[in-house]
Amino acid sequence: MKRYAVRLGGRAEQDLRDLYNYLSVEASPAIARRYVDRITAFLTGFQQFPSRGSLYPELRKGLRIVGFERRVSIAFVVEESEVLVLRLLYGGRSFDPDDLE
Image (cartoon, rainbow, N blue to C red; front, side):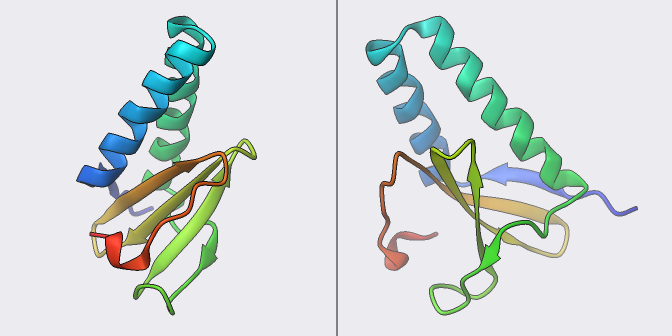
């Protein structure tokens, strides 16, 4: 079975940091760390099963969006040998399609 590399784009890395910072203040650093760890573990699953979620080719060629624990939307594209995570949107945040790297 083919395995894909999973890479977070710059915006996705920032989204993950922002989410950690928000949860650290609103809940606690320990809760924030556990939540981010669960997201990271979920993303690792793209190594074997990258074709999850719904396709949105009208926004960007190959764009897929999948939900995580009903609170985070993960926008990504599956390329030849990697899954590129473009955004991690928490709590219904939206994005501008032009903002996808």
